[in-house]
Amino acid sequence: MIRSDLANKLAQKLDISKQEADRILLTFVDGIMTNLEKEGRVVIQGFGSFRVREYPARIGKKPVTGEPIEIPARKKPVFHASKELNALINRESREVPIARVFVESAPLYVQRP
Image (cartoon, rainbow, N blue to C red; front, side):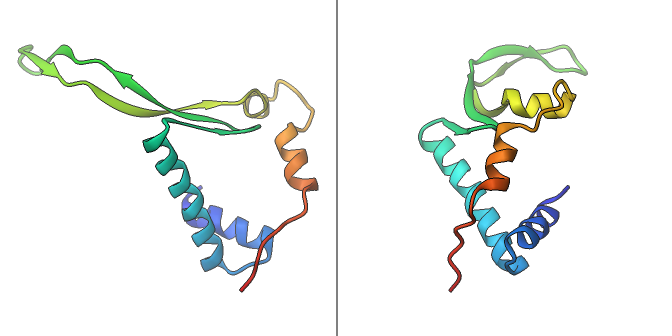
């Protein structure tokens, strides 16, 4: 599934235009990215968490020559799936995850211009 597919599903679910759904999706992703940059962690209950992991500098080898090179320290985003998502993916449980129950039963508060 790509972003446009996800935006289409969102548009159908919320009964809004595809452009508006895409704008909501981009705002959501931008919020995650901004918060990761500032705070280093984002938690979405029932789905998982994103965090920034720091990797120290180290010495590596060039694959072709075997020559040692210095690999600088860096940061990378990491995603950890929730228990509910893992259960859904692995079909460990036939119960509906809490997040899905919440989403399906929650009223939709979408302000339309």
